[in-house]
Length: 570
Image (cartoon, rainbow, N blue to C red; front, side):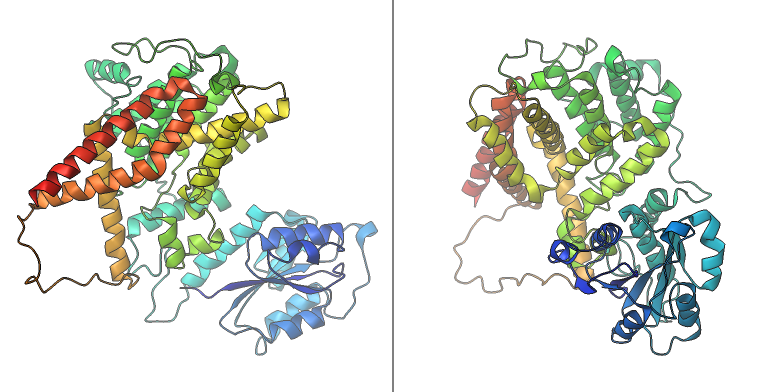
């Protein structure tokens, strides 16, 4: 694994040099110059530890005390081209002179010191400062995405120069020798190119050509996309691509979203780009999963009558009148389209492991996002960059904010926070749509996030045979991760019971029965702890979705019965 990154910020405007972390940031910058306070906030949002300095001499003295294995990014405020902002340097090593000193004298400094020049005009001043030794040149008003881009590039570059006998570190876990696999690493690498460098490799992996489908098959797909018993597990990726296309085409019929829609060709290309952004080797978190989530969201919105009725289903699904007390009335057609977009992009680049795994393995992805909602933050960043390229109007602030909120809501570590938010609405009484516009906006954002949460875990609310498929797929993905944990030495083997003399003789379960018992237990745990209470709470604010809560209840009773039958056998 690469060494820890440390950031130093050198600016003559710094009034109180300090060591900074997120915990002390606000108090440390309270009396700082506005630009210094802004830049330090951006830096600390990316690096876990940073220091600020007002003079080069003090900065160099600090650098000499840092562990040589630590990789240091030094942000240096350079002389301004604006006469009004020019100043007299506090020491002889200011700006360009400091870059020259760093390049010529490295014995007393960390071996991996990476200077970054902060300037007024990146394009005009790039060549000069790079020639003096800066690894990058950015605007002096710093922005978090640009800083993260530097960190990503540094990680990639330093991996190429590791000593002989060590392995290149992967984005997902420790080293490429024990990582999940080169295909997964290449996918994430290609997405980082899109996110930070606005480019892809010459052999662009984000382009695929879907196969044409027979007319009869196309008609069948159109007939099932509105059905809650949507059999995603029985469809090919090409058929899933076409289902997604039909869902979006139906949403495009709304007059209120005409300024947001894509042409048929651009829509098809957008879906294919996303399809290639998912890892096909993942048993669960793959393109099939996100189309299933998309279709669940589509079903919810049809039932809530936020989308026009879909008449091609046999029979049409979930007809009725939206209840006067339903929170569904707070959504509009634009919200509906944005939710469909969010659904198909919410897991972009998923590596098939959990946040807990990424944090425990000290993955660079976890470091990049400071161990908080690691995967969800990555999905947000990658998906929004894909949208910026292929559906740029979806980057308007209100739309982007909704997408980000909804994707981050899929972090199950935040599940009970959202349950408390739903409970707070229920405590307000029967009036779900209020006269308070600010409160209605808050409730709309909460409902949008909750609908994506529900769609993301809706497999337990599907017909039992479909639900069983998804439960088995997730079990297989967890098993792959467990195997990887063993290879990485992250997991202690479970001791086996060798003494059977004291055990009561029992009938041995077959392997299939053991797997069924394990699946039943996992499904019941998830339903009881998460899905059941969530869908019940949603049913109270959106009665039109009671069909999903009812199916969860039916599935729960079936799993309990099966588990009881297997227990009787033993």
